[in-house]
Length: 128
Image 1 (cartoon, helix red, strand yellow):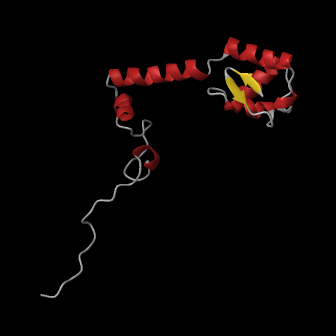
Image 2 (spheres, helix red, strand yellow; image 1 turned 120 degrees about the vertical axis):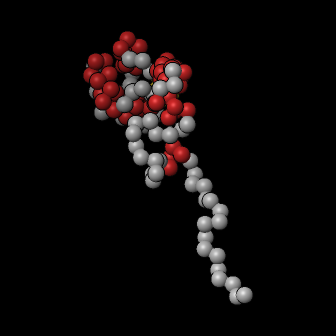
Image 3 (cartoon, helix red, strand yellow; image 1 turned 30 degrees about the horizontal axis):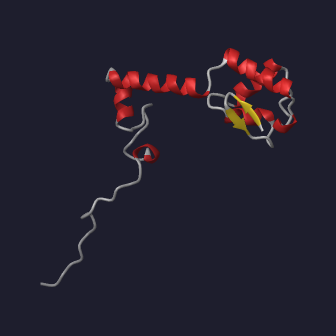
């Protein structure tokens, strides 16, 4: 099991896929890192040598912000938007979509489980 940036990455997967398990590294960034570290992207993580792992770690530390530091930056940015009461900050605090999507329909992921309102069903006609 290889540990890179404090994360244990899967050993059975290809290294370019395994690197994307680190927060802040996607597929494209993963391939760029491997190119800079001069490591074959089609090798399995378990087949890496310690030297190759240290090269990858050095490239990540030198050029990229990942994991806890990145999460702290993103959280700080959202907190700043909330503090200055910008439109996006208000949307974040109300748990609504922030990028202009419609909410009349859809937006179920952000708004949560649908709440049924009682008394909307038609009542059966009763004899009088």
